[in-house]
Image 1 (cartoon, rainbow, N blue to C red):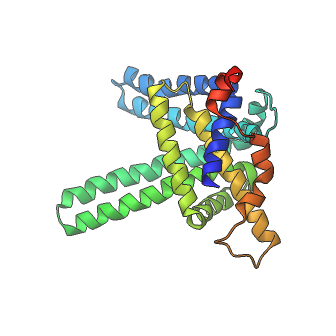
Image 2 (tube, rainbow, N blue to C red; image 1 turned 60 degrees about the vertical axis):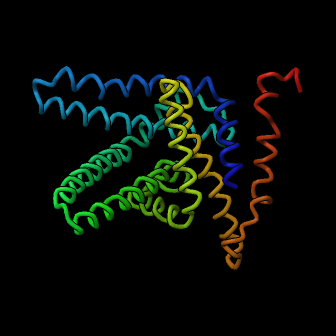
Length: 257
């Protein structure tokens, strides 16, 4: 399932590269705001901090709207770019709350690390270790936030709850998703965020969510089934057929196949 998830995400990104380029271009412009705007207001610290916070929140709002658009791509639909406006109207409040919550959470973690490191004793090490693993768990679990919002629920509390349930119930898959996003981010840095960029990350998240929904639909229909023995081959047979058997060489140089 995991290998197929990565394979599907790659080909979904490949098939929608034009759309991803546009999504990523807007994201690059938005990323430039928190990088350069606070520097222009450095003489006014309050405005500098407010501009940084506002810019980050704007990025969360944008990602929330685009994630729903990417969800449609992963489900083999052909959404129009104007659909993002509709998604924005539906998701901006929850995206804003998530962004504010994330800023507050990581600020607390940063402050906590400074406090515990200053202790210089065993309690400080325990405190830093605790904060580290809490931040890791929250960071991975929150990767499911937008996929859950787009596919399962619209209630803020339930979205958060289901995000953590998905993490603890699919820890291995969540870790692979997290590592894949890290690799995606590193590659994006190397390519100046043009590709795969935020579009590629969102495709990874939505591909993972789509396959997990197959799992939970199966468990709902078969409540006595062994949760450790999910018949993935049967569940994703249709998805395999839609993705098809393709190679990168054959796609770039079809005349060589």
